Length: 332
Ligand code: AMP
Ligand code: TRP
Image (tube, rainbow, N blue to C red; front, side, top):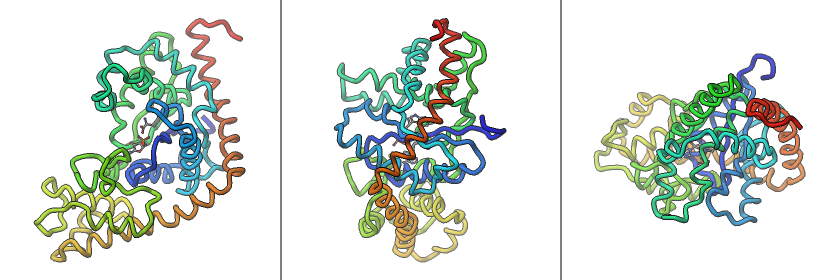
């Protein structure tokens, strides 16, 4: 939009404490992309309420998430950082797009299928409609690129379909976005069951590392991470636990698979795990200190999200007005 820079939009929902997976799969890449692109980073609170939230926890987590963005190195001078519910265009565009989205395509979303498995009839309609709101988020900013982890690819695909359909029915309105998945770290696995993705909703707390876990907890969890009896640091499908730890090490340090394999050849797992833990600690510890600083400074956070929402509202409303006009609503 501004100048010739391509546009990036991404966000995380403040529905639980963030994991190392969120950090390596999403935020760490945003930091790298902020120089080259016009970026919008959003706290997806409207998405968070698709599952039940305690109001005071939602408030606390929304601000904490903003603090995490800042502490991770997202520069509020260069990027637009804002809270989704502060830009009403998301809800309005979400409704308009809902009306040209099919029940069939939404019912094929694996995240919806997984989450609704045990809910029977009382599954929220919001959870079903979730991908349409996500499409609105992205399309409103004429986004070129959406940096997300692998689990969001299907949602990106449907966002493209929804955008293309609107363009077809009402003439060109939206840029059709591409997903941007990091080469390394796009899917960090559970450390107790490396066939599943690392997730904050996992029951076994040793399966995940939280961004706010203290160093001693990180060391303990890495030490307990499931490996195998082969005793070799090798990157392959037979050693999923080791592969996951290698991925974490690569994503943080930038080392290659080959470099890691060579470094730990013949050394077993103890030294390797120790180094993985130290890499995580040295990445997260300085961020944790900054997060605490920002969450203690509510006035500063407010300044950032207010400024962010002004810019976001301006840009989103331009697209929203086009949509309304093309659909046939009377201009206000
Ligand atoms: P969520 O917490 O579902 O809002 O996810 C926020 C972002 O983190 C999305 O871009 C996800 O793709 C990414 N993400 C979540 N879990 C992981 C994981 N285990 N590995 C890599 N990326 C992840
Ligand atoms: N659905 C995303 C997730 O669970 C969060 C999200 C909502 C998002 N809207 C978005 C991510 C727009 C990227 C772009 O991770």
